Image 1 (cartoon, rainbow, N blue to C red):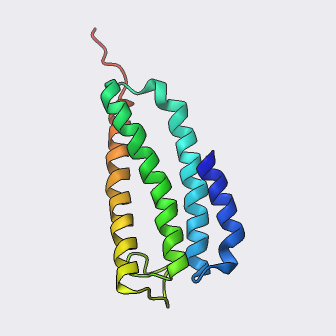
Image 2: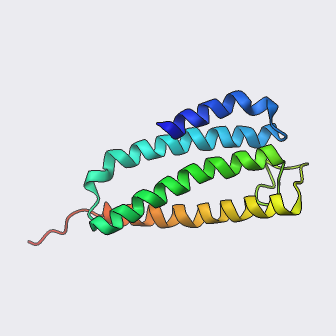
Length: 130
């Protein structure tokens, strides 16, 4: 719910950001990723994975969802566009800013694909031994 709240608060800041369109994207990332974490919590006890993998999944989900919001918001503040050419159209950050947002969002993508793959695997259902 914290991430959902951060997403809502981001909505109030949209007009003050260097790139308001990407600010809207950050607002939506916060709200949607916050809801996703709530849904993940509802299915958590159904995951058929080891406790060690659950611990890894817990942290990768938190990192991926919060970082998705954060790096999108950072891109809106700095006006970057290399990783987000549609939302960032007409804006360019410094080379360092562009690289930070690019690396952050690339790692978010990898983290979330891993996390969702583990969740899908963990929700595969019980094997019928009949």
